[in-house]
Length: 285
Length: 285
Image (tube, rainbow over all chains, first blue to last red; front, side):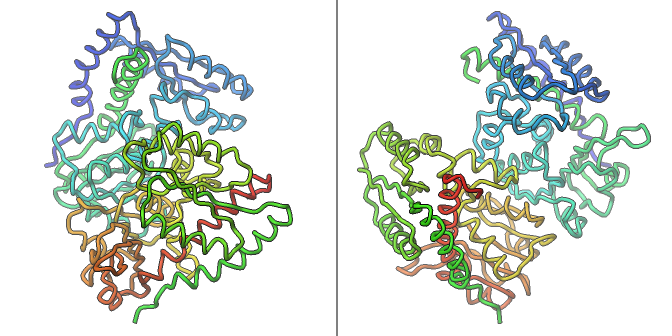
């Protein structure tokens, strides 16, 4: 039977380190805090904010929701984000997506300070990932994949990894992070033919396509590691991209949904906020 | 026998379009020109400059060599490059690598205007490639691979491509350009185990490792397309990464070295200079 890679265990293991860093910052009179920017009134965005706020509070990190009306003018929104860049009480800025069509995403991306870009949406931080440079912020979900592998002692060097999905939020950055760790990475997507042949030759599968049930038994090599990044609502139930019960029959290790990668994302977000706060305080990150 | 993909044919086909664009610019009193920045006195850099200058001149494009002494101070070099950014007679800036250790590459990269960055070394243009955005400049050699495939009518959509090499000059950008065209791309490198298994499953191989003889008969699937980006001097002779005679027995199409990808690189450089000149003149690129 496959070993279940539990995101909660990874998050739990990270907690003491996070609390320690928060304590150290507080001795310097710094209360690390995130601003979540939300444009329009979206139920899923509220749910995310509520969850994040709860998790961050539990670790002593502030979480402020900046909700703007759907019809806010772009220049006004940019000015408000710009003010957050200059606010010493804000250490991280996260913009909920999607944003209304009246606002250009590129303009939002350009206005955020790379120093507070804790979800890695700026050109500055994305290009660092492409170049393989350290010292920026990695996208939380992509980094969560790396953290789960590290926690369970999985080395990716020389391993064949199939990443399914090529978004800038997960697929492309996770491919670059794994490549940086000397994995041989194949990037698959909706136009990939015979996906099963590629994934069943892989030692590690990272499913980030947003398609429930995409990865079944025939996609998984015996003894492989399956990481499910998918978050899909099917019949009111949260499911990943992997048909868990079938894939688990062949995989040596597998992440469940919920309780897998998603459970580690918030820990990575907190670590990014702390890194931002430490750097802004002039402490080496 | 394999079809030989001749770079010179591709370059020849591009020439009339290049000449036409030069003519149009000249009617606007614009003489498109490149500045090649060279620090220190290196034989290979002189050879490159001489070759590029000759090719550019033949198409009516200016090519100026800006040679600086090995011991130039970084701030002085940056000031000189900065002056080129503001010089309306310069449309493209190319910095020969390697540069002396006393100069930080990142500082050079940061000072060049993205609008004149015809070899795609700036964060701005590299991040565009990572994001899959149009409108920047692509690295000349990576784009030359795309041009050769296009010239010979090869569609990469749905094809399996093995890219060998992960440099920012060729490997990573060519992987992103091919991914953008819906290829399924595997990025291989020095830590890849059983490279032969990966390449022999690929429909297209792009060899950009800088290792002579890396790709032999056992690496090539019957009917595949082999693109050799390697430029290596062995015993005074220019060779690629592919053992041409052996690989050609199995490949359906193959590029030679010399006379393959390298012959197209200068054409792409010229097109980038013209695009820069057109944009700087306010003409849509």
